[in-house]
Amino acid sequence: MSAVLPVREVAKPWGVDHLPAPFVSPGGVRIGEIWFEPPPALPSVLVKYLFTSEKLSVQVHPTDAQAADFGESDGGKEECWLVIAAEPGATLGVGFREPIGAEAMRAAALDGSIEDLLVWFPVEPGDFFYIPAGTIHAIGAGVSLIEIQQTSDITYRLYDYGRPRELHLTRGIAVARGEPHDPGLRKHIPDRGMVELARGKYFTAHRLDGPADAVLMAEYSGALLVIPRRGAVEVDGAQVIPGQCAIADSLAKVSIPTEALLVIARPAA
Image (cartoon, rainbow, N blue to C red):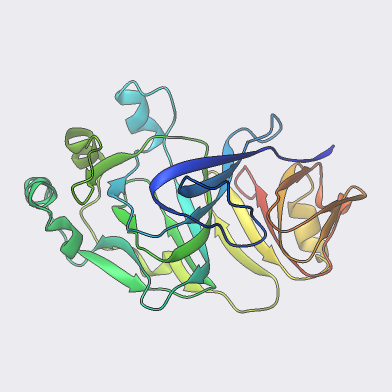
């Protein structure tokens, strides 16, 4: 089993007019996200690229249990980000500077001051953030990143800079954690070498730079997603290039001469 996944380009008001290489801009529309459609073998994990020219809304996602309690058709959403490009001064807003209660959070969302209560982290390529469900967050302008997430489209917007889109204050406040982001959930990864990015309840991800060792081969012995980053990767004899994402039935079927991300949609043993 190996296949390059179908791509979906998603227009967003905060997206970019011109996509960076190797993507081709459709013209006449701002593209904010490029999704790789989850395959049947790994339906619970979604990989996408995000490109921003403006700030995203201040938002939050529920856990699986919270989504079920609200009667949502999708499950909850945990996600992580790997920054791949950033303009000077680009930032990511993640978590609060100080603990905050629900009523104060609601008031700050209504008057817009919630933006100033977040911690805005200056970012550069190689910065990585894990965003548990319930974490208030916002992606700033001038950022390109790869997002790995549970396959869910639930977003509760708390503040959107006056854009004419629906807010979701009741549900958003109900699921939000009014606390700072755990420092252990963010890091800067080195330019080269094998790095564990995420090891969570829903997915595990690594950045690999060359052939895998025996430990990683054993961990990725089942279906996985492969996202080339520098140069082509071979998946079961077929070439997969940057800007694509492929599924393989095991890491043994993948040849990585340069750099790629690997994702499995299950917790590590």
